[in-house]
Structures are given as structure tokens and as C-alpha cells.
Length: 375
Image (cartoon, rainbow, N blue to C red):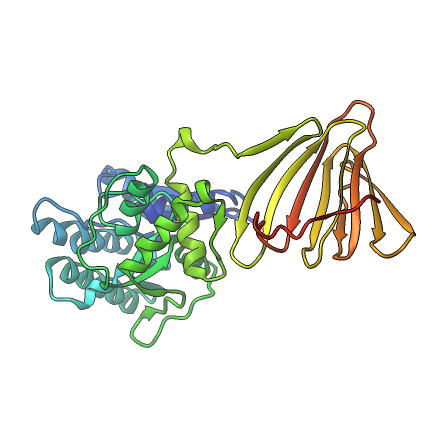
């Protein structure tokens, strides 16, 4: 089966770039045709003649003059639809609109006019049309200092630049870019049913306020220093964290950890979580044994990722010694239960042992719950 030809207008914009990249991952299913308001008319006409689906994302939202709203939104949409009609190409048509189409302002009026043109096209041609009124879209590749507060805040906070917050209590409705792309792909696949008014539901949105978003982004910016990773159970928090990290400066992706070194090797905490413990890494030189201690309540998991190790256990009031031989060539998780003194020995003659360690609680130097006892 030949790949379906998908025309994306506004293919170089924020949503367009994400959609273009996503569809491009499946070249056997989709052939992407890219256009914009500035595409030469003959090329756009050719695309509209041959395409099998249109995703109309192109538009104007930050013009120098309000008159450009009508030209870039309503008039260009009508031009695209008229060209489809001229070619008798009644293909399905997706349009991303804005919740501002419900407002009495030049931008909202231009988006509403574009919506009505799409609905008329659907009635007159019999083509399937899908209109998504989107709230504030955020995610990777959104242009900062343009029309997205989240993008601007992420960009500035990641660079330790000031941000301007006029009203922390200002209400926001957000939608994550991945959820928007999923909606568009579902429409392309015929998995969306418009409502009676011709519009489509946007089921995954996030109602919040400006202060919450700002506080979260500043919290994320401190993770590298504090090593404390906030909970990401909430879908909005998870999406905001992914977005924030995407705005890091390319030459600052890496950061060093505080390491504790001695004659045995080194130990470094990687990050800590709120309620889910902490992750660390340990190296052990050949022939060296670490540990020989036990915990009242702390639970650990050891995973050797490089080298060969012998892990020994003894119940603190018993004599039997248990041994587990583990290797980085066959990663194995070893649970370290409370009440057992334990050790880990590098049994390689030449290779440094590397072990990832998870503990169910953050290390507290004032109450380490670490009691030394030889195996």
C-alpha cells in the first residue's frame, strides 16, 4: 500500500514541526507535503491536488497590524479550501483553531471565520472535517518570547534570566504538544468523531494557574543542585518537566555529581525523589570489599552494571552466610533486606566494579541507619 500523502500547512511552526517529525517516523505510512502561507501558489496548488489529507495549521497570531489576522487566518484558509474545490479533491480536513474563537477580538474573529469556512467546505463537499479548538499548547520546540508563556518561562529560567509574572493567580488551560499530535494522528486514522457542531473534543487538558507553573519550573531548575527530583505522578508536572529540560542550553546538558572517593573507589548520589528513595552509583577497585553493615529499616537494591561481584549476607543474629555472584554481563537485581549485614566484593583481578544502588529513603547524615558488622 502506498504511503498516504498528508499536506501540512504551517509545517515549520511549533505544532507543525512536531507533527512533521512524528509522521516522518513512518515513511511507509505517510508521505508528508509541507507548505506555509509563503509557499509559492503553484506549488501549494499542486500539493492540494495530489494530497489525500490536509492538516491545516498555518495561521497568524502575532502580526504587526491587526488586519493581518484576517488575511493570515480566514483568507488563507478559504484559499486552501477553494483550491481543493477547484481540483475536486474532497479530502478530509483537520484545522487547529483556538479557544479565542469564542472571544470578540480580531484574532478570535479571524479564527472563527476560518472555522466557519471549514464547516461550509465539509457541508458542500461531503468531506470529513475536524476542528480542534486548542487552549495554550506547550512542549518542546515552541518558540520562546513569542506567544507561549510556558516556552518563555522555560527558556529564561533554564538560563537564569528574569521572568515577568504580572498575576500569579491568572488561570491557564494548557494542552501538551504530544496530546495534540495524538489527536491529529487519530483524525488521520479515522478514529475521531466530531460533535454535532462539527468541532472535536480535546479531552486531555490541564487547568492550572500561572503561579503553579512558575513554581514548578523553578523547582525543576534546582534539581541539579539539590538532586531532589519532584514527584512527576501528575500528568501536567511530567509534561512541564519534559518541556523544561528541552529548553536547556545545548552546551549545558551535562553536570557533575559530588563524588566521595577513597582507596576503595568512589560513591556518588545521582538523584533523590520525594517518597521514592534515591539512586546512587558506586565503583569498587579489584579485590576490594565494601559494606559490612546492616540497616534497621532501609532497603536497597544493587545492580552491577560492569564487572563481577560477590554479594554476601548474614542475618545479624545468625551464622549462615549467603552468597550471590553477579555480573554486569547479566544484570541482576539483588535486594538488600533490613536486618542482614551485607557486603559486596569486586572479584575481578583487573576490572573496576560499577554498581547502581537504589535506596527506599533519602540518605540522612543525622540518622543514616547504617550499623557496621563484619560478615
